[in-house]
Amino acid sequence: MKNNLVGINNIRLINVLKRFNFLYILKYSDIMWNIKYNLGKTKGGKIMSRTLNLFIPCNIGEINNKKVTALNSVFGTKYKNGVLVNNQQLVMSDSKTTINIVPNQISYSTIDPDFKTISDDLVNIFNTLLIDENIQKLTFQQFETFEKPGYMESTKTSYYSYVPGVIGIGLRSFFNFENTLCEFKVEPYLANGDLVFFECIYTLTNININLILNRFNLVYNDYIDKYSHVFEKLNN
Image (cartoon, rainbow, N blue to C red; front, side):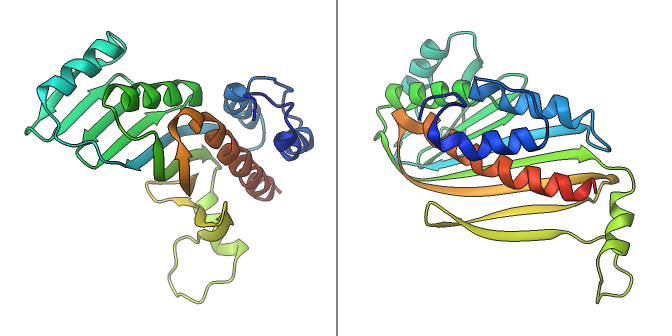
């Protein structure tokens, strides 16, 4: 699928954007910026934070100085020079992204994610470290919070609770995506009852690293659909 909104696989997303009067955009990487801008103008919809974590099990082998030097050469000044921790972990980071590499897994954490940047980084890591390009499993985990004054309190009156003394109620949903069990959560943010906490966890399988951007786009197509429906209900 091309990295834009004109592909067949994005018809449902376009309809969602129409329904919520979001801006029409062509670059898929701009979708979340526009959602952030428009949700910020709706009732109680200011986005406060967004974080994406990726966990990719893979056979990397020994983490040594040779591999650290090779990655530092590829990434140059983009990230702080990778460092070897306890002779078994390689860490690279900048102000918004942290990449951890151990012998059997790559972990990638970033705020306000840009999928083109993420996919380019992962391709570079796989090519440099000579990792098998076929990924058997990838966990895609996103957190975000947005402002909804009084949300913690409102959940107690909006839903019937069997638990005496409950201070807030959340929803955890399970669904199938590409024949794997995934989940979506929406609940009060415990540290601040005026914030709504979203979490989605997708498990992707059988991915070629060179096509990973396409899979990210498909996940976001599905996630935005769910996110938009929940947001509509919260603002009724």
